[in-house]
Amino acid sequence: LQNFTVYLRMAMNGKNQCVFSYSTDNENFKTIGKPFTAKEGKWTGAKTGTFCTRPEKTNDGGRAEVDWFRLQ
Image 1 (cartoon, rainbow, N blue to C red):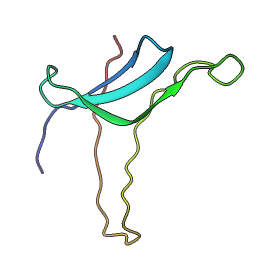
Image 2: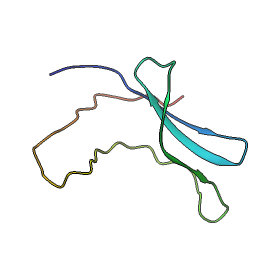
Image 3: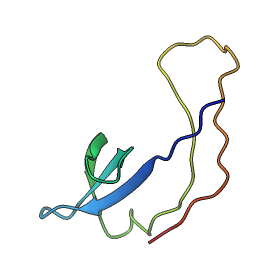
């Protein structure tokens, strides 16, 4: 079992859009998905969680174990 750290970030750009990204070194972040616009009545805040997904429909029993995470 390999252990490593993944850094997750959510930031707002100048267009009032939320941008999600990740990094393995806390310096070089890669964008996840597309930015979305935070709108009143739609955006009520962030809920923190983790999940795994992939395009294949087979289930080979992959997993991730999370010991802890810290919000800053």
